[in-house]
Image (cartoon, rainbow, N blue to C red; front, top):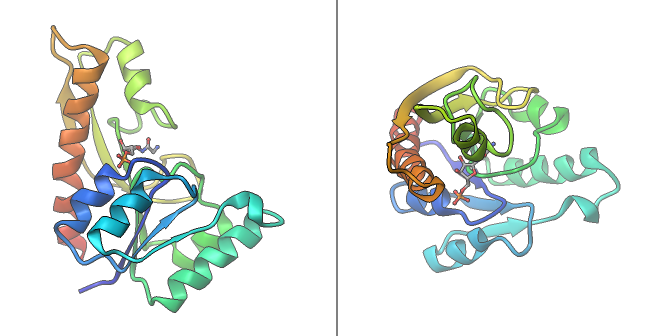
Length: 179
Ligand code: GAR
């Protein structure tokens, strides 16, 4: 069984779904007030948090992350709503071992607002993508992706909820194959 670290910046609902199905060695958050940290406490998952602003620069910040991952002998880094671009320090240490989930059908709607952007573009379908992380923004090799329809009576809230439900199924499916 590979040792998994999950990274989350916000609510951590994907993290929670994963922690209920797989042993998670640690949660890392770049936001001290992330609700994901609360979830980790309730789930008994060790959590660590440091913010970029505590460091001199992004290299030093990512060096601290690499040290944490090395110390715990992490095999797979699972980004689940980690809203920072992964830079060379972390990538060169862990490339090929970092995956991300994106709430759209890449290469459609990359970036931080995949759901909102698809909604505003009036698409009839969007999707969810799990991919390897490389130096680009949501550009790494796609592992698996599924389509999610936008229904005629959808509001952005119901559309968003359908995307999240799809994430909660797809991410565990992919991780089961990888570990
Ligand atoms: C998820 O929808 C994830 O796909 C998205 O952030 C959300 C985090 O929710 N990630 C991105 O947009 C990355 N570009 P969660 O904190 O409740 O899991």
